[in-house]
Image 1: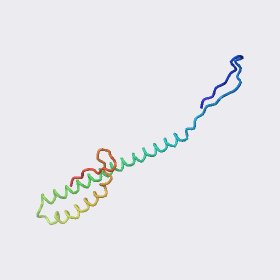
Image 2 (image 1 turned 30 degrees about the horizontal axis):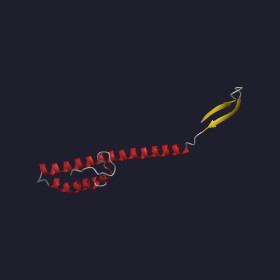
Image 3 (image 1 turned 30 degrees about the vertical axis):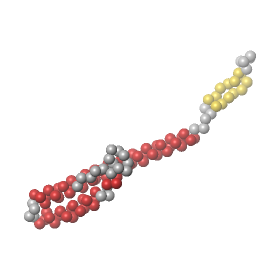
Image 4 (image 1 turned 120 degrees about the vertical axis):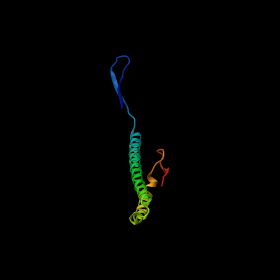
Length: 114
């Protein structure tokens, strides 16, 4: 908003006031939408990080189970744990896959190593 006095050029008396204002409601609405989009992006990045960490944990579990079976191939307890453990770690990592981001681009699944 900008206000100013209009003066008579001969007497220098104030004869009127003028006010110039601008409607910024559209700009404010766009700013609110931008903030909302930034918040959603932050939540997506956080969820992607959590999914990535969870997938890493499950991959480590699957690797440990595999090592256990290879180190002690004759032990029945190692073999009996391997299948359910490997299946559980795979099933746990599959739901995380859509949330993993590669290069920060949404919708791109990261390479998963099994």
